Each structure stands twice: as structure tokens, then as C-alpha cells.
Length: 499
Image (cartoon, rainbow, N blue to C red; front, top):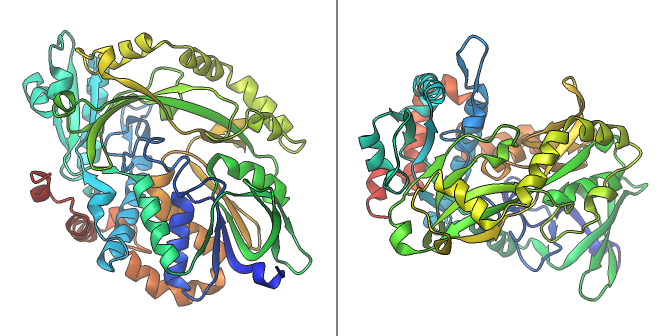
């Protein structure tokens, strides 16, 4: 096969939600571009994007307490919550665009309306939640949020959690009725099915062994068939490395200076899952509590209603753990092989800075099922061990880098690293990645394709009506977007009773 036949405009590495989103957007903006997707596994959405590997919360800051912090003067900073919520509104607009144009046939295949709640116990925590509620409910993005510290009201909202619960200390919750449960695995597969119909070349069971820049400016990928071992070279003008935990190794192989000095710290997780209809029917909400002291933000305990293959079930967790693998289907040598001379100092500093975190993760992974059941019973007092199964979640790789806060700082969230000329970009990090995929990919497009932005802007505004506008400062636009996306995606209050 000639090199010319293996040349393409864009290569997307990894068939997860990020590549699915970027590929779908680029096909709308530049339909003539030739796009190739390379995935190591046998199908799309099999790693972090898979519905069994993440919480599917549809992160909108409605229930996650770690997106809001109490300042020294006692007030609550909701700036991060605003940012994440605005980004989720952007995702909902793009999904609505796809539904309106029949690129997604039925939104119910990937998104369902589920109330989002925060639940807290103890006088000090209740006071914090009340202040948080006051700060958020006064913001147009969070209009409609409810607060209650009345156990009788909480029994109506969350009967399974309140059943036989001794209320011997203050307890309170906030509730936002039109939160969502998003099946990112299903969404990923839907988007790739559509891309395939648009003549996007999707190569499964192919691993990218190496990546380098040729003299002609094109990126050359060494691609190996994982079944036969056959190797071929593929070249592209632009490469997106969207392979979850696998992205760091490929970024390092690219040799771009922007990738130097960055490390990764893997965090694994376990969920407990209940599929018994008589228990599942008693709980319809995603309820988030507070993370234990010393735990990473992704370890916030929560009891979630989930819909997988149209079946309602309950997830509780995640219980954090440690594995040196960067992917669930990765290698035990992933962590050690990611340490290079360029990031050795950063990684060593991070090790010193995060001894307590490492100790916490090891303690978590050593827990028995009964110890995990004890944590679950703090949410569901009557939980029985035989009703709940353990499920291993996906691997997350947190970014480690030197920042103004210190050397070897562990970063929480997602980060795009791109070459100065925009010819290659990698997505690193974890939660709330999938929920904010559209915003993240929009920023990537602006950064990597500045020469096209003027021509593309009208189409971008068609896909995302709020593009270029800060939603928080546009209350009327927020109302319009809420109304239109809830209608298109089937999330309106009227439809909830039907489900």
C-alpha cells in the first residue's frame, strides 16, 4: 500500500467520547476532510467512556460539593461550579443540534432526566450547604434548586436513604429536579456509527506504537495490528491524541516541547451496583456526599440512579484504589515507563507531596466487601451485602506538573496540550471530561485551527447558539437554552413522570 493511500487530513487516536465529539464537530465544519480513527480495542467507547467505567453524572455542578469551596470569610466560592455548568450547557446544545438533524435518532438512548442532590450531615456541614444553596440559587444558571433540612421532606425525595435512618444530628439536602444521567458509552457508539456513515475510516484493533514528525511537516504514525502484528505507516496533517490514560505515553513519543515535564498519576476505582427491582424502584436521584479527608475529589461518595441498556440500576461509590496501569486494559509498567528524564524531578516532587494520598489509595484498595458495605450503609442504612455486586471502574490518570503552587502538583480535571503550530494535540486528565467534551473540543479547534475560525464561526453558532457568550451574564439566553435543550433531549419536567 502506498504512502499516499495512507495519508489523511486528520487522525484521531482513541475511539472514546473525546474523539467522537471532535470527529463529529469537524465533519460538520469541514465535511470534505478525510478523517481516520485508530483504536486499540475491538469497539468504540470501551475504556473510560464506557458506561460501566464512569458515574455518568452529566457533571453540571448541581450536586458535586467539591466544585464549591468555603472561603476564609465564610462565603462560598461557586466560580468553578459556574464554569463546569456553562460547559455542560454547551454539551447539551451540541447534542440537541445532533438530535434536531437526526444524527441522533432518540436522545433517550443516551440521556435521561434524574434529580441531582447534595446530602450532608452535621451542624457545620448543614450551614455550609445552606450558604452554598443561597449562593447558587441566586445565580440564573442554578435557578430552581431546592433546599430542605426537614427529615419529612427528605423522606419524600430519597426514601431509600432515609428509611430507618436515625436522625440524631442535623441533616440537609439540595435538589435540582432536571439533572441528568448520561450514558457516555452509548453516546460514543452513536456518534461513531454516524461518523462511519459519513465515510470516516475507523480502524479497530490497531495500536499506535510510535509517532514522529516528518520533514514535510506531516505526522507519521507507526500502527500495529494487535491480532496479526502487521505494521503500517499512516500520515496526517493533524493528530488528536484522545486515548485516555494512553495519551501521556503518545504525547511523550511525539517529542513536542509542550509535552515535556508532564507526568501522570493513575487512580483506579470500584463501584457497588444493585440491580434488584424492588430496591432500585425506591431511589430516583444522584445523591452526592462529601469526600473523606485526604481523598481525591473523584472519590466523593455518591448513590446514583443509572440507566444502562434501558435498565434502571443503582451505583454507589467510587471506592478509590491504586494500580500502576494507565488504562483498564493497560500494562502494569505504564506508570514506570511514563517517567522520563524530562519529568523525573516533577514526579519525585509529586511523590513527596502526595504520600498521604498514596497511603489513602492503598488503604482503599485493601478494603474487603464488608468494609465497603459499611460505607454504603452510611447512605443506605438497610443495605444488604447480597444485593450489591462489585464492579471495577475505569482507570483515571491525573496530570502532574510544575505550577505556581509548587513542583509536582497533582492536577484535577482535564487539560489539552498542543504543539505551538497546532498540528498535534493531546487530551490529558479525568473528571469532568466527558460532560464537558464539547467545550474542551471547541477550545482545541480554536487553538489548532485558527486560520479556519472566521469561516467556521457561523456553523459553530448554529451548533452551539450560546457560542461566544458568557451564559451567566445572559439570564434570558439561559432560559431559552434550558427550554430548548430540555425539550429536544426529552428532559422537561412533564416528561419525567412518563419515565
